[in-house]
Length: 336
Image 1 (tube, rainbow, N blue to C red):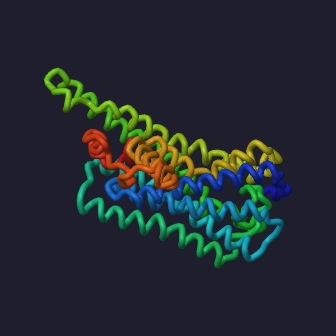
Image 2 (image 1 turned 90 degrees about the horizontal axis):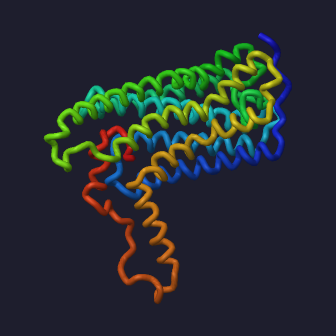
Image 3 (image 1 turned 30 degrees about the vertical axis):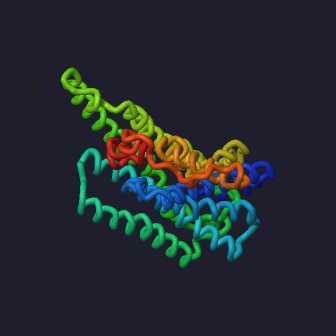
């Protein structure tokens, strides 16, 4: 294997962009957790999985933020700690992302319900928390996590590039699961969308005899678009990390290209922000309640004479159709 490329030096502008991405991702993940806590009626099974993904993304963003802020120049105890936390959180995020796709596939295509899904949730917890924890503990115990000269990261610590078996540990602590997700996510979402399209076609055959109330909901196209966007956004964010990983293995100086460094930094840190955009800001039921809550907070901060007499509450879904939106959508898809 060729020797590692010279260290990748981060300029202040690159650090600022990645730090901003970390902060936005942490904010987005926190917002997803907050919506789950505020509105119990939105706690579908899929959104419970999204909650655990958000917790992993929140820890990942926080650990990356510390690493980029410190911009380690060599091995240290906090370098190892940050590398261990980001390794655990990042790997766990991969597993929870695939778990959501697998749950959608099993609940929509295979019609898994009841006790079967409860057992499935326990399996998701064991795998998505347990496997990353075991890998991280092993990597720390064997002293594989350390300073990586930012060649396979953007300022944070990961696998020590001085380790002889560094490629194996890079694969085990992230890259293997990342590349498997590139294949698994599009495949599962493609199968889900194919199943939904077949169901739509079956309904359209009976359209002449169906009443308006039983016809195809208009929001189904939005759900289809979201099914496409989930794996697409994941790949667009993560692919830059894979590109720099390959370039590092080849010893290519292109690994230090500023554009690649920035894209890698944003891609690894912005997953929580992307999930927030899809499942909060682009989800009508959640967005409406959040906007109403913000308006209430603004009104409550005004002098009593100007504020309304009634209590300020975030509204429940205002229309029966809206309240049933998540029920008409297959339970797996977290609202549209």
